[in-house]
Length: 368
Image (tube, rainbow, N blue to C red):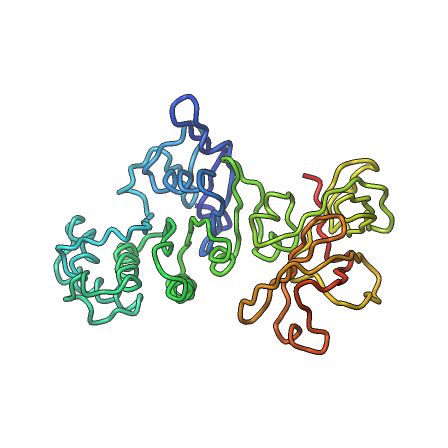
């Protein structure tokens, strides 16, 4: 292996199911050593198929898969230095925790003493020391997921694959396990690849994210890059929440593009943020994250975009409130406001006339 090369390389992978369904469409992707990488997208986008191709459970219709520089496209799953943790845990109910974790080692024919030592190490890694004699029915959902992780790690894979591993857990436990996954990856120093449709989960655990749509990779980057600089309306809308205002480009000056938007009831401005300037007359959209919007009864004093409307409703969510404002054009925008603002002297209530404003720098210009 080239020491500077990627641990995983997908080279022009496509996968057809029959002659009608193209699940993965010409995907090329490199994943670095010790990286925590997320494949993110809606159901049916091809992310799980791509993971199963890496694991060896599916064969690509075309293209090749490389692990540490070696072509493993035709290598069977049990001969790849890759292990997979499934959504359903797949913990054997008739075995103890220790027997579950050591199952793969027994199949490989390791000596009993070596199996016992490595099972204890794996259980300690997932913070279940002393649980070897327990039965699965004595464990919580989170503990069963840890057993599944230990069983995957005990064989010391070069890559750990995680297929929606936390989707069956409740929110609080899921957040705790996300932190555990990050800790594990740092502690054992191997490559993690997670498949998820949960945007918050991907952004919480991964150093890089690949967003998939209809079998194709549509954007790859760090969580902040994808959130702050989405390349399309699909990515902007799928990663977090976004307000989209449709319009026509009227010109670009000094890195700021102006749009005329019927949905806004007038002109808007957005900074290009490194994208190519669209031509005058082109259709474009401005995306604004809810937390970037300022809602106030008073006319905003700062330069930027300012629209008027009426507060439809306010949803209280503890640390923040979501304010829905219907613009005079009829378009509804959603603003996210910290609750220390909600209860000050400028407190806002349903039915109030308000101004919604944001700077040009906080508008995301989208042409797709």
